[in-house]
Length: 81
Image 1: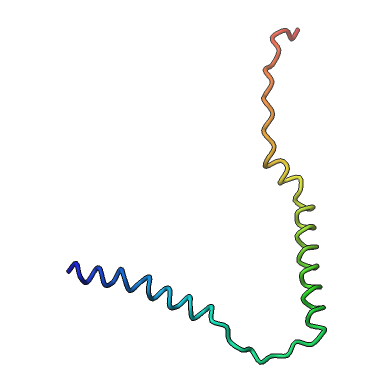
Image 2: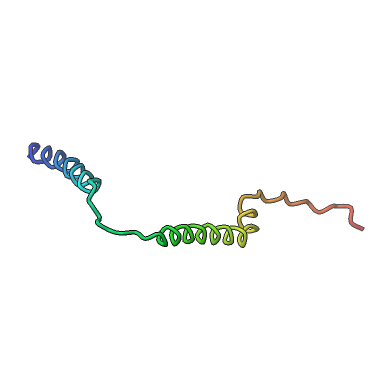
C-alpha cells in the first residue's frame, strides 16, 4: 500500500513537469502580421489605459474615503444653556 502512494506522489509532479514542458515548447505559427496589426495593438493598449484612468478618476473619492481613517466623534458639551 505504501508503494502505491509513493508511485502516485512521484507521478503527479512528473506529469506536471511534462505538461509544463510541452506548453513551453515553441511551435511555428506560420502566420503573417501586417503593419496595421501593430497599430491596432497599440490603440487597444492605449484605450485600455485610458479606460483604467477614467475608472480610477470616476471612483477616486470612494477609493480615497476607503483608505482614509474615520474622524473621531466629538463628545457633546455639558455647558449647553
